[in-house]
Length: 169
Image (cartoon, rainbow, N blue to C red; front, side):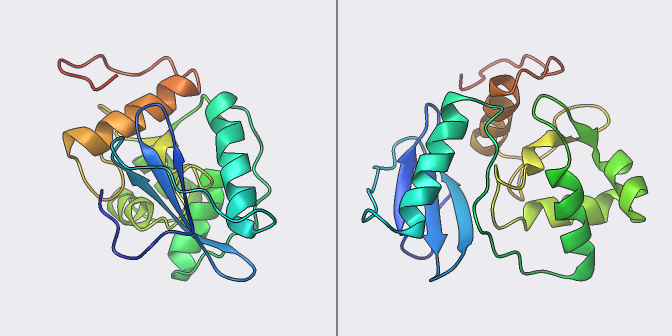
């Protein structure tokens, strides 16, 4: 959960922060960061400002519909997985295996695509879970990253969240 390049803006969430990267026409990356990360306001009338507004809308209302211009760069397989994830409604999940069957792949390849998702939340990789638990998040299985996944799913009203000792929320 670290930043390798500067962010155009950072939105504070209740259990994490969201770093936003843009180019002239698209949101190119969202990074979920430690809750200790400070907010960074973008200049008004910029794409980063619009992203802040829409991400704040989601944090207030899990049914918020994003209409951000995003740039997804990846393999054909990754693009298929990311598009299938975008069709999963808030409050619902699919297993890695279910999504793999849907896109003609395998669960491990779906997991890899989830971990490489450049715009989590907008492309809701947190809605992909393991057959026997939450699975990983953001390319890892560490307590802090999985706690963010758990928070996002709870925010959306998903009932299948296993309660774990030491949860961060």
